Image (cartoon, rainbow, N blue to C red; front, side):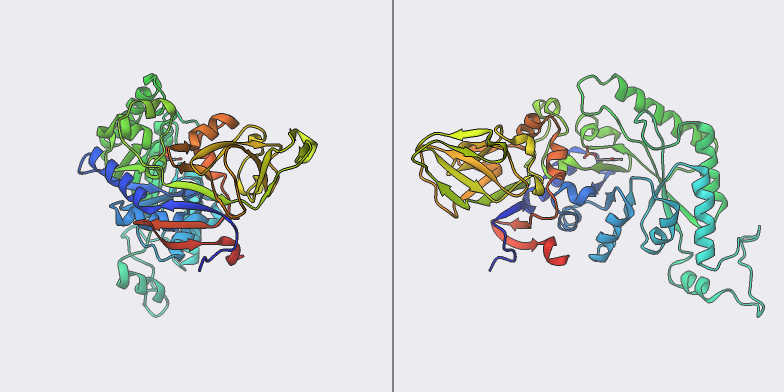
Length: 422
Ligand SMILES: Cc1ncc(COP(=O)(O)O)cc1O
């Protein structure tokens, strides 16, 4: 019995996720671990199920963009380290602490404010210079502290320092600020310094000049900290693209996103055939209406397409309200019985129309929106090209309204229908 009533679904093959992880595992040095990037609901694939599969396949930690995404994973029972790659507002620090989710830090002020918030919430006074906790009037430490220390040592807020070597988005940009952030972390018993990283802006392009510049800058920052006597925590810098071309830059972690989903960071990198990846995502639907008319007739809003007499037009229950872009009006294609047919008229919020010749369609026939049918395939790259974006966005556009169906060894193993949970 299907656990969803729509005739449109995103099909995620978890065997492909596993296979892609294994492919990268073999490509990187043994000492390098995999941090699976599952932000934006697992690039549209569903973060919880992808996270579980990635961890089962050998990833040892996860990365998200914002705190909420990390809490979703914790609530699903995932206990591994989770790093927030984006900025965490100060007001959310306490939650990050409570849910044991690592924050990216790069501002001295943030460190100071975060320390106050965590100490205040934990009823902690600043430690004295001997590192002793101030005792209460009966000479005892606050119970909470004792409980925490007895369970797991002093619970700390895990932080990774982001260094901006050229991405121009987040991160420290001078050695002075870097040192100030490091000192702010060390001075307090609130923080656990777990990582230092940078992010590359051009790792997916053929010209590696800027990439090398960023890597050299990153290395100089690391050397600067070592010369100041700091023992560095986990170091990471590679996204999928940099991992493909420079696996030796893996350090302690690679931050693996698009490649885990079986997609390539760019057409150029795909052309190098460095790794054979398996796209895990397909989008499928079923014909909801079939019509032939004896005379020509208009199709869709604005009647931007006029069907000829006897032309077979099918209607599909997917539209831009699902993340199937309106830019595919009179431009996109779908697959039916292994053959390619054109979207005609404007894609509407919930439905679209397709002209089908050569074969007889019937209500309920399965249609592939993205993915494979027979010898034909509609890739996210093809769709991205048509609408002037990249495969990342095409995947992330697929929103909550479409159920996610997870496949393992050709069988449906779980279904996630967010409409049910609203
Ligand atoms: C900071 C950061 N790190 C890593 C990623 C993953 O990139 P790919 O999807 O290209 O692998 C994204 C990101 O924003």
